[in-house]
Length: 224
View (cartoon, one colour):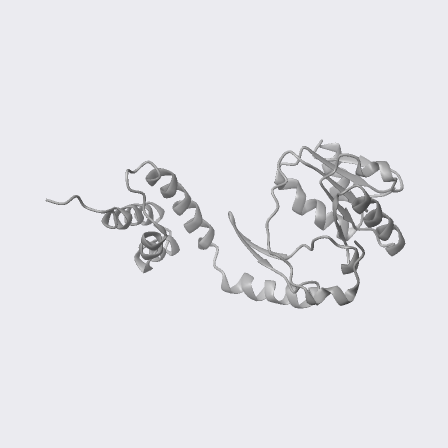
């Protein structure tokens, strides 16, 4: 189905993609393509293929290290064989449009840089704190605003939020074996100032103990 800029009044559905053991193709080797590759490398892909006559130093090093396959050529339709997602990230809008057209013909979801009508999805700006990811999107209206919000959040969101997530994740694994597991309300109440203050001041073990104690207190007690 073809799209136009007028279709943008429909909202995007926010989602995070699980690309583990899948194939992704990036067409292009410049700065923009490099940012896409950097975002894809940690995703556990089975295959990451970059198609471009020339590539950046980072892509070249990743190819030599075996983290991706560099096809040193112009884009060919066969480059999308077996792919689940594709990124058209060259500086030639005509090439990007051909990549998008071929991807859609094959049922491959495609992101075309700076060309919303040729996108099946868009990539948000990200703020990461350990395993915590905050995604910012303007629905393609203004990447500059998304970047501005990202810079604001990078100041406002402290690094220890990632540590809090790591502690909470470990405790969650521990309490999942309890006969009566804490519900969402118990978790929200347990993550109070005492726990967060301990994490913020570097007292990780104290924070973990406090969190377990508060979840223990929320467990139902047997009747006498």
